[in-house]
Length: 388
Ligand code: NHW
Ligand code: EN5
Image 1 (cartoon, rainbow, N blue to C red):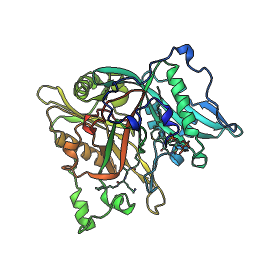
Image 2: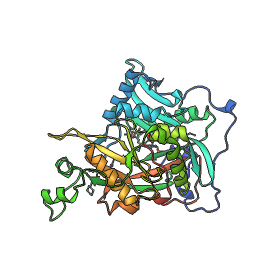
Image 3: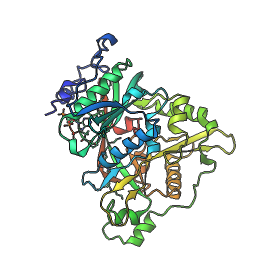
């Protein structure tokens, strides 16, 4: 069934439930001198290209490939439309390697027709911090599908990760592969129900009118929590402490230091928004919430071409109830003109989803580790990791 994945050091379906297998690396690292020095062979019309994401032109080529060929929902009504600013942010975190931003071009025309990326991350699994690659943006042009290009691209990114002496990876996908660490559900909170219904992202509920639906999803004009404000650069140390302490309770989470927090969580216009609660009495930072901006193209609608979506990122509550904190996040997202606020059932998100009128979507997200076995699948609430 999985001719490629059966050959890879990942948990295999036949081993699910086998309690005799140890947790941790599936294969030991090999000496760097034994890592293949030359790139894998591509079919002859194509060549490898390392993509310089600092170059405006290359960033535009990647943007266009993904805009036209990346992930769609199961009915092909919406397609992710990551912005250039987002791609530049997502692919250039502290310590990134340019060699992990891998394109495939047509030799004759130099047209970019496929892409895969890795970025370095320290991921904690139980009490061990493991250097990993986060793999994302795997994309093959629609006209080149089902030619087994993806396995070659995955082997090539693996080789380049190995050359940096890194032997594990984390990735997510909407499809089932051998074998998920956990399977999460997407939830959606309507902010602009009229548009969502017009574009068929959502439907008018039974016995509901448009005006009752609009009223149901109405939100206050401004956040309710005293001391709720945008995160600033001076907050990096406090947010890092708050987040590290919070994430330590999950089985799998990133091991963020101050540099990581500055990159991943300091607000970046149109890319990532972060808010915190500063106690009006003590000036302590007690709570934090964040979301990233990922619009989708609306395929074939007369009236609208873009769905503005916010995705819940990392949230921490110590004083403000998480429900109230996330209600404030919905309020600021609405003020910023997002149409929908999306969240997964990871971390403590289940505690607010239903009460804040999120509804389950038709999509799931499976989380995977490469060359690292986890003995039993986790519950989504045991996962403290959000990939972009
Ligand atoms: S998930 C988003 C993936 N991208 C899309 O869905 C975009 C639209 N689709 C496409 O572009 C986030 C193509 O359909 C793709 C497959 C390119 C997906 N992950 O070339 P063939 C990520 O980016 C397997 C992994 O003929 P294709 C995470 C499939 O099971 N494998 O198919 C990426 C089959 O193998 P099997 C996937 O449709 C993580 C083989 O590919 C996959 O023309 C990557 C078929 O290849 C997916 N999403 O192209 C892994 N989709 O064994 C990283 C299909 O079943 C691993 N396949 O026969 C770690 C590496 C680093 C290690 C470091 C130590
Ligand atoms: C990871 N970096 O299927 C990338 N999205 O539910 C790979 N559905 O938006 C991950 N089909 O349910 C890929 N509306 C996996 C996700 C792929 C994209 C995807 C789903 C997630 C989605 C929407 C639209 C469905 C359109 C028809 C959906 C219902 C919303 C409704 C709002 C009101 C309350 C009930 C739910």
